[in-house]
Length: 231
Ligand code: NAD
Figure (cartoon, rainbow, N blue to C red):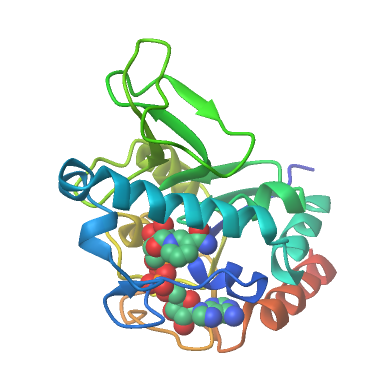
């Protein structure tokens, strides 16, 4: 029998228990940096050293972090379901937990890319990108991150996965960052949807939604067991 398809949409909250701070722990700041300064093409133009330092610190933090119970539980779902993870996160904790199909909407911190040819993408060994590190065409490398104001190349792919899903699971996102948050609108109205987040927000327009107001490390493993038992 064909496996049911589950789309899982994750945000910064799923990695919080791995020690990676969410976006809005302190309003308008991300780890004490102004979001506009470090997450926009204008910020990069104005002060590449500052932007590079910010992402170097994020990369270092990600390398020191480990997948938590929520990342690991989602891997177990693959026993009985066809699972696609669509993440807004730039960390690689879903990969390291062992999930097979992962779409990164906002880029990947472990990668850097050319500033003249965006298809020239490299995986970094360590954490430190230096101003002066160049691609094979001689241009400065930048973090492989989708900044505010830039297009989201993986969006079409993510939309088609959500539109064919039989079940949608959303974990640890404030549903504030567009166009990613708009993805939920592509799911069939009638399929079961679950949100695991201790502080659920912006859920008003989502049909057939069960809210699990718990931390990901508690709520996701329990939900996964329930889905596996009833499949
Ligand atoms: P957000 O910071 O706007 O919202 C985080 C959500 O997680 C909130 O709803 C909060 O209630 C919830 N949360 C906090 N602790 C949780 C826990 N233990 N379990 C479950 N949920 C928890 O995050 P967002 O909606 O993902 O948007 C942030 C943007 O910033 C994303 O686009 C992402 O690219 C970027 N970001 C990524 C990382 C990462 O890669 N780990 C970290 C911070 C920010």
